[in-house]
Length: 305
Image (cartoon, rainbow, N blue to C red):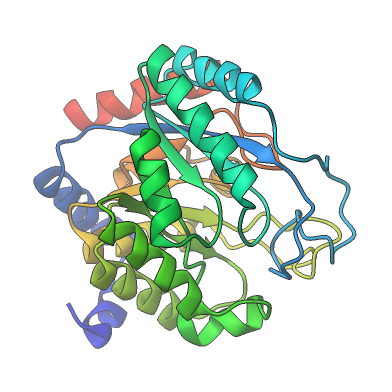
């Protein structure tokens, strides 16, 4: 479906759009709900200027700031992720990229985790070259996370310290070394529906495997701290559109589902989503794990009747 077709599609009554997206999810995926847990392994200390992010040193935010966690701390968090029911565990670091020593430390931690914990491993470590990505794959990483954040046309309004093309280069490098790629972005930063459509079409062209959809949580001290959150209907329409464009990919609901979709926790999973983050985010808390376990059972009951 082209851009004009998607614009017309988004004019459908919400109930019809949800039915269309859910049918595609049912037909194109195996109706498995993928659960991911992330670890903030290096917090703050970032020189980039992403307007949405609490971890930039350019913004006046009140968050913990610390250097890279130890291998034992990463292993402990991986075991915790397994206990809470996560299928995947993602090691995340702030900053544009890593030093060689940091990369080696993470690769060693991943190898240790893979020996001791039965969980699929992801990493989100910023801009990396093929050699670094190949090292991570050899250590046991199966999927690399690197969001494109928004459309190419809106990207420069959100970030000025690196380019959209640099993000795409890292995604392509991860693909070349045989890694799966997790890449999505954030809705509610002031972008238009055309920006969201463009983002979805580019992700389809890049053939990414998993698409996390974050709904902006305005954080005090960031340039987007006073932005009015999008409505639940806008968020659900966006999720449905991503499913319709991306067909068989994992559409994963991340930050913002608790605050924007709090009265409709199952709605995104009726509108095409088939994955979510559990156990919290990088600098903001999520729902209690036990509450999410109940939600998972509700989703499965809806899907399987």
